[in-house]
Image (cartoon, helix red, strand yellow):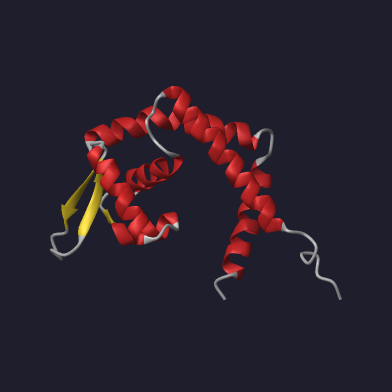
Length: 145
């Protein structure tokens, strides 16, 4: 018996959609002179929502390997947008925070991100969103087994 996914490369559809969104967002960043990549924005966004997390947790949240996150944080530190602080309970561990300049950058960039998100979502409903999240979560969790 043929399974519905056998002939449907759904992962290709997901991948091409993500690439399209990233390209549109990067173009918007470049046009606005934000001096950020989409990947850097993702880190800033996570740090805004989770101040003082470790690089390891940031790697997990962004699904990027630790050396990549380290390089990105190094660059964001050089730009004055993030800072590392030694953890009080473990001197070998550093926690990452946005600097005041990083907070300002977040506030500056967020409206463009929201605009791109709204454009992408178009006239889809809240119900559509709930179905979308359920389906994506299901696909994601199917690979954790």
